[in-house]
Amino acid sequence: MKKLLLFIAIAALLPNAYAQTTKTKNLIVVTLDGMRWQEVFRGADSAMISAKYTSDKDVVRKKYWAASAEERRKILFPFLWSVVSKQGQIYGNRDLGNKDELSNPYHFSYPGYNEIFTGFPDARMNTNDAVNNPNTNVLEYINKQKGFEGKVIAFSSWERFPQIFNVLRSGLPVYSGYADLKNTDANARLKYLNELQRNVPRYLGDSTRSDFLTFEYSKEYIKQYKPRVLYMAFDETDDMAHEGNYKSYLERAKQEDGFIRALWDMVQADPFYKNNTTLLITCDHGRGNEPMDKWRDHGADVKGSENTWFAVIGPDTKPMGEIKTQTTTYHKQLAQTMAKLLGLDFKANAGHEVGDAILTVIK
Image 1 (spheres, rainbow, N blue to C red):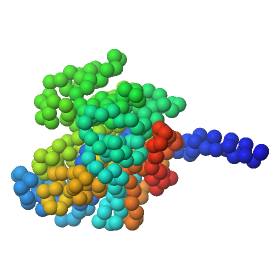
Image 2 (image 1 turned 180 degrees about the vertical axis):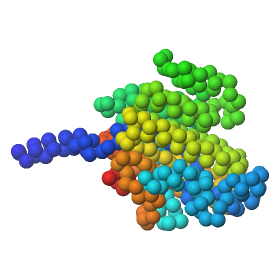
Image 3 (image 1 turned 45 degrees about the vertical axis):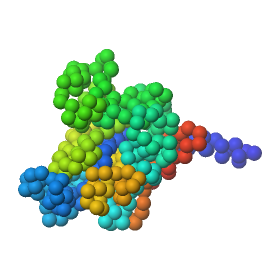
Image 4 (image 1 turned 120 degrees about the vertical axis):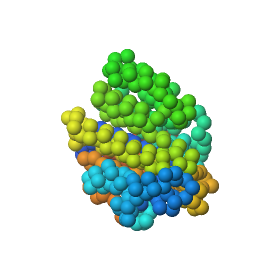
């Protein structure tokens, strides 16, 4: 009986014991919607540049082309391949046999984000419509843990995240599309962004805001409020791909890499975040590849759109660079990985299985 009581006592202390072993106190998650693994690991595609999808072909070749994939990917994603590849880990280079994949069979945005943040693929989440997600998400869970209350925030370009994170239930502050920041004590810069987004050209439609504004909100919010967890969701790579505009797809990818670098440099210069913050970067789904025109699409009937990638850098992640092992990780594992990095164990609603953490990410 004494041994049983001792075991129960130790088990009860395990989450706290784990929390003491991690150095990560803050977490930033960034997604690039529909960003293919091919460009992440190979850089610009010569066949795509030569095809009908690319205007100003000579300009694009001059800007993005180089002889080797290593050179091309560094041109396109300089932060990813000059900083994260040296100080963190990058998963999903299928050319090396390292695979990162979706578990959900639908291969489009809402099911992809549900999988990333709830830790499992849900057959009910087969929609991009404004349906409130019944599943507990990891940001919601973190927001309820001691020391994180009111310190979790999300900014997204795509307007669907209030439903994906079910703000009516979760209470998470989620600022998506053209929603204004509601904080009455917001600084002058944040108030100006509210004004600015009401007047900028809405070239992505009336609901989806530009990634530049999403970045600016995220940056200024960090400066003023010092959140413990911030999610920043970009959208334009997916929009440009659906339009079949390869030049703009590459431009938006490089711009988003620059936004991430600027954010990382800023937090590493801030004593509140320096050397105790983990950054995780990924996508919600892949895209097709064969035939070539399928690069514009994704979905259950598009081969290859289940193929994804992710990268991570932070104090609990060994600097292993590009992962070359013949292994497969799944997006359903990312939610628990985020939680474990913060010393937490993600527990979801009844009947909701959560994928295991990716232990190679955590020392």
